[in-house]
Amino acid sequence: MEEVVIDLIDLSFFKGKRVLVTGHTGFKGVWLCTILADAGAQVTGFSLEPPKEPSLFYLAHLSKKVRSIIGDIRNMDALESTFQIAQPQIVFHLAAQSIVREGYRNPRVTYETNVMGTVNVLECIRSCDFVKSFMNITTDKVYENKEWVWGYRENETLDGLDPYSNSKSCSELVTHSYKESFFSDGHVAISTARAGNVIGGGDFAENRIIPDCVRAAMANKDMIVRNPNSVRPYQHVLEPLFAYLLIAAKQYQDGKYADNYNVGPDECDCIETGKLVDLFCLKWGDAMRWIKQSDNGPHEARFLKLDCSKLKSTFGWHPRWNIEAAIEKTVEWSKRWIDCDNIEKCMQQQIEEFIHD
Image (cartoon, rainbow, N blue to C red; front, side):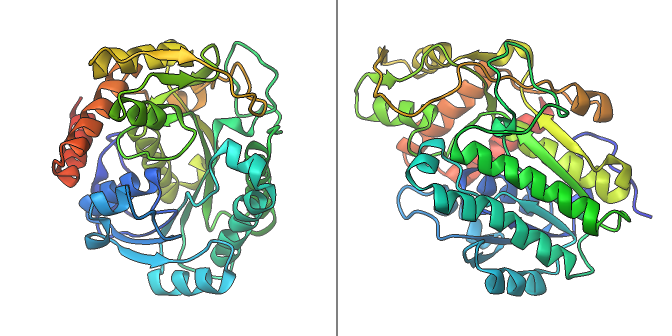
């Protein structure tokens, strides 16, 4: 038997492990693969082509560190082939259509990707004998949002309202069904992780608050905020990634840890979007400011918080960077990118800082 991980962020467990990451060309996927590759894991990524410019995948030189396979999670043949090539012991499923507004524009693609993509991954796992630990990464938006001011717990009703959130709720239900129907003997440990809103360097997505702030700063324009009073559980991207690694390692060793987990900041860091942008403007400097301007967009919940007591009590986990530190690290990364600095080195430095804080 391998020694169970004791230190919450001791990455030695992953050295030599065969790991598959779907969605490896995305924001969270690149950061996760960087951590795993630097820890000595044999990483294979499966994802759509990364955007050409700007692209965190290229900035981080990830193709040097992992076996990168380009494909669509909806293509079962391509996914099965990838599983046979990688022979993964651990699978992190991050591939998704992850933008709420895109879900309204293209609901069919959103459901095909987020629901059938999950089915396809689980089917691949069901048909092989080498996977021991599977993590399905969903979102804090899977819960039926009742506009409560307190955090949702893992036993709350799943029922996201908009197509993106609902498709991720369905992904959770699919995972639970497969777990009970095909993996009830525990030969594969299966968990889902429901993370809050992540921020950090290298997120270039449209219609996300911090990337929009960076673009406004670069253009020397006022930042436009649609819903400054909405409350969200903001956290640096490294917070949930290290939680995913912790859960995957623990359940690999002992299947009793396989479960559903919320991953979010402490209560004090569940803040209004307007306050988040205030922090960004303060850290960025250059007299940056924001204005409120509604664009009559689709419905967005006002309150959304997570209760992470389960993750804390099960593993002794706790957030490391508060929201101020998260914004500082994001601004630092973004300014180094603007200055054409070494982004690969910047990411490695921030990962080391996170580990040792």
